[in-house]
Length: 75
Length: 243
Image (cartoon, rainbow over all chains, first blue to last red; front, side, top):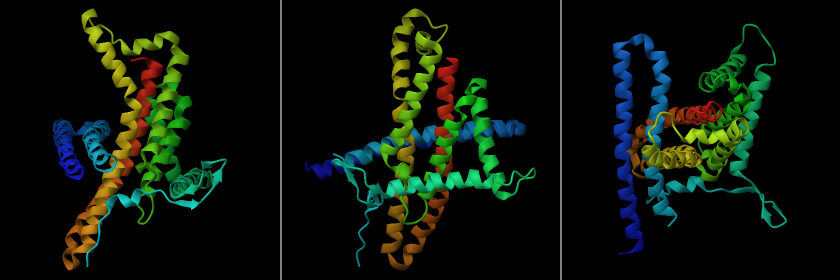
């Protein structure tokens, strides 16, 4: 198989990691909405954690994307 | 008319003022220029904004005070009282990353934090600094950080290497998180911009998506600066309070 073709396939496979990011972010904000729906007064305290959780979940997915770029453009 | 879409071209470093000292390339690059702009803007906001010392702050003094209070509150909540001496460090980190991220969103500008070496330098400073703080404060007892309390001995054999690994991976996750977010965001902007330019009148749809992406990128720029700063506070808290 040509190197360029293998790189494309590898990059495409690496992007599957973003599924985890999507599920994780959905979980985080679902928990935020549920908790604020039960107890609206707690929104100010819970929201910073929600944004922190979102960024950390997104980061894990983007590690996979970084590997995809690494495969495509560095090797 | 074929427009070639090269999304990663926007990350190339260009020498604005070529400069070589003793065989080392120390040119003033576009990245260095934008870092200078960020520092100048932050200094102007804080110094000029608070020049009036008004009791009821005007617009700029309000902005300067809000940014100060935001970071001061974050440091005090997450690090506790022992963290006051680290406030200037966290404030510098937060403001620099915030301004660098926002300046990268200006069209035809350059995203400084989209270079892994920049984010790795920042993350390495945080990691090495926090480890030194922990060792200076606790000495040999700093290693208690990797031994959680109330864990039975057989589990410790498995747990301590995992804790150690997740500690040593911190500079990499910290830097790659910021880098990958900026890289992915700006690459998507370039790709959709390329679509908008290359399909004539139908380009209004990718243009619409691009507008929404810019809004998302503004959120991500602010959020990534906040996450970097708060993780620095949490790592400091780990080192100072050892739990």
